[in-house]
Length: 196
Image 1 (cartoon, rainbow, N blue to C red):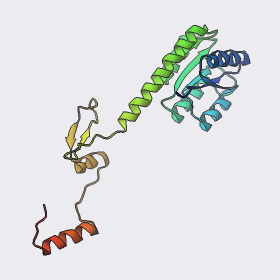
Image 2 (cartoon, rainbow, N blue to C red):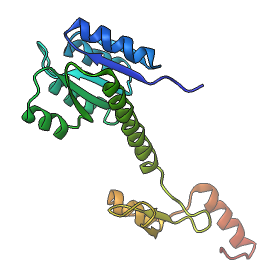
Image 3 (spheres, rainbow, N blue to C red):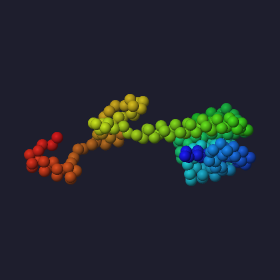
């Protein structure tokens, strides 16, 4: 069974919270609400959500400030800002700061559902990209590592572990023997066997 997508709605208007949570809940989403930016931020710190829908203008913490904090907590989470006072400057600012969408109240519920689905697809894609970025390709035969830094995935150069660590950390590698291998080399030398 697929897990329900979790949505946090933050708005200081109870009618908006009630309407959106009812509608999104009826479409299979797990919906949580908060009546202020501060309460929303506390919820974001307590648990993870797939999507944050926040009013832009609220008493106390604004939707823009909540967006900034949300991006620090979870850069992959989708964020949609809604407002009753739309202006081009606030829309540009919201999108520049990483909002996935910007809607004007009152929102048509069909349009809201389409925007929610789109934002959740973006969130899922960001998580997949982050997952694959954290996989280090190592050759199964020669054990070289593909360094894709600054290149398209799969287009990087195959280099030794030592070269890779030197590039990434600046640390020089010094080869030595661990105690077990040193004993094995010594035993082999006494038996007249040369190391490979």
